[in-house]
Length: 96
Image (cartoon, rainbow, N blue to C red; front, side):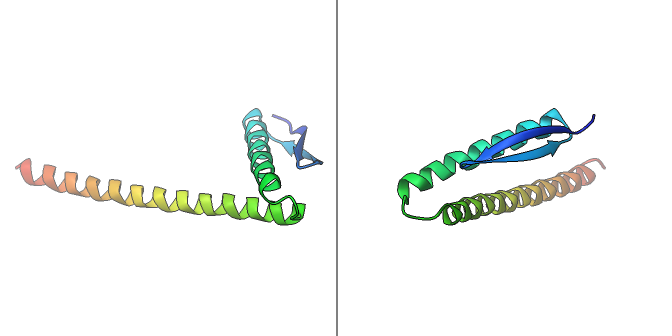
């Protein structure tokens, strides 16, 4: 599929982007929507802060959430691997 040009609005500014698929377009639009929702919350809570500061906190919050999610995913992966080894050992032991 050829790249498609789209516009994403974050805050009061529009950003032209090129996306390679409808799925990527949807993800970009959802991401912009989430950023704008968080930005609105920071605008209400800290009206005197600059847009730059608010966007920095949005980025910090989203990055912290992503890191926490990656850590939880890694723990789940390790737990599944441990259960898999335990099951393999059990089956090997009881198949004789």
